[in-house]
Length: 196
Length: 196
DNA sequence: TGAAGCGGAATGATCGTTCATTCCGAAAAT
DNA sequence: ATTTTCGGAATGAACGATCATTCCGCTTCA
Image 1 (cartoon, rainbow over the protein chains, first blue to last red):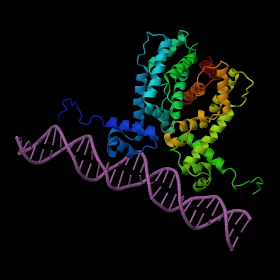
Image 2: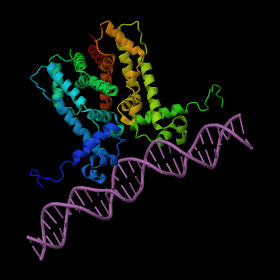
Image 3: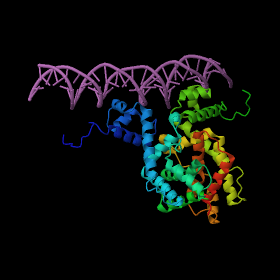
Image 4: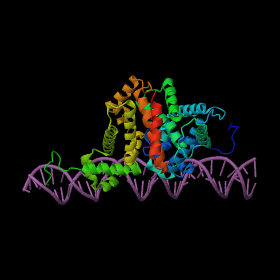
């Protein structure tokens, strides 16, 4: 074995393969359209093995959700700088989220399904409740400085993200790409909705 | 049978019972969480009978979708008057849609699930494509009169409805009611997003 | 009495999950 | 150094439950 970087465990990324396969299959066929057998086949692991990495199907889906949400929030904060103006920071957040959805369509589809599925309602928390503190601080600062409308932060969040989701959805279904011009116009329109 | 208006088919409203039961169960447990057996029990009809009214489960769901969408569009156009200003007509459409979602939470949940489900992707059309002509005329008129932003009508539609969906979702999940004050503020914010 | 349609048990497929068994590398023993 | 023992990870056939759908005995009306 010429793997000089072998660190601790022999099998490193079966968990990764399973989660990747799950994202792919679920985006294409839905939660219930994805059986554990098909999932195992796609991941290249035997059925029983999956139960060594996850307690069951539901837990697997919840883990996948947490992972994607974390990545999404991290991507959203790329280049976010509290030294910038509220307006500039808004543009950063908005563009990052939009780009994330466009670059990760399967994640987008998965999150939409997860959000609207009563399948596992009990464990769910709203997207807003699990949002990093940076977001809440951002909205509150904008409110204090009288730049953003004096609305609750989760309302501002809805005004900011709602059109993104609707837009990506519409254009994903219609198959028409979102041009940079349209993207910029919609971002400005969202800013008009938020700003005083 | 004293039903003198029986036109073509013998049984009048078993179809209604089935569709109502389907809406109720699907909103609570999802497409796949709703078995045909449970559906029959809730509707008060035997299993086999449902197959006399619908070719199968998928067709049933599609019919339910078409019915709800039709009702939703009809409700949205209540009080819509082309004699009013663009701004007034926007308020009418926005408020009607919001009220529809609040008054019919199960329909809202169903539509959200349907929209984000790959379950029956092939037959689906975007909400916008099946929107009444009145909507398109409205947006185009607003554009011609330089009151609305010069964006494609489906983009304006996304800007108008996106925050509604996000808001209803957030408050449905959080259990907090949407106050009339908030509703009004969000409507004005959406108007800011659309208007020039 | 004959035809029509209702009803629910039966059906085969598929679901998520389990568990007895195999496998393999390291520790122990010689 | 070589063999034996051993423990946990890997595996997939088997399982009971449940799925959507079918089909035929039975009721119901003409």
